[in-house]
Image (cartoon, rainbow, N blue to C red; front, side, top):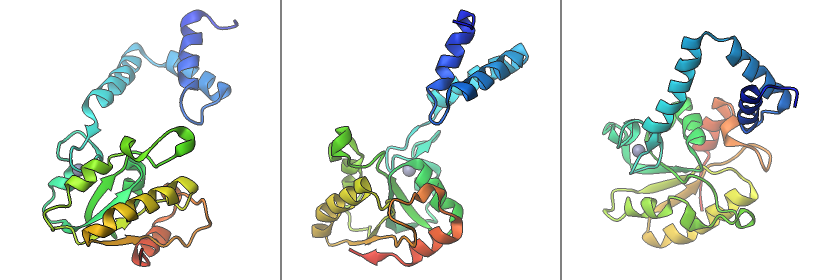
Length: 198
Ligand SMILES: [Zn+2]
């Protein structure tokens, strides 16, 4: 080993981050070593605080310090429409367009038999709990057109259609396999406007 143990350990930890290879992990570790003690302590505290304070909203499963989250608590939002997304990053991408004024539901993943992830591992039960009072008139599925996305849409459509709620899916003007999270605001706004009933 070329690195002294605590440094090697720090590099190893950074390398666990998504998209971070050995070179970037080294750069990050050296950056931390160049920080003042106060700044390094601040970074460590920020990580621990984020982990402790940010939780899933018990209604919609979005990440928030509050429960219910800011979106669920905002009674000015359209309470009759729920937009279903795979994760919090997709919610934020849609929220950034300012096009959608309803509520959300974050599935916390997609159905993926290959990864051993079935519907029971997603927040689908929590979604069903939000529906019985008849207040929800439309559920928009804003889910990526991937194999997992399509499997999840199919499952949700079969589950929700018998409840007499209008189920739509956003129209992707994007190639198959495109990622909602990285779509620009204009494309997302159009996808939302062009949603179709399924
Ligand atoms: Zn919420």
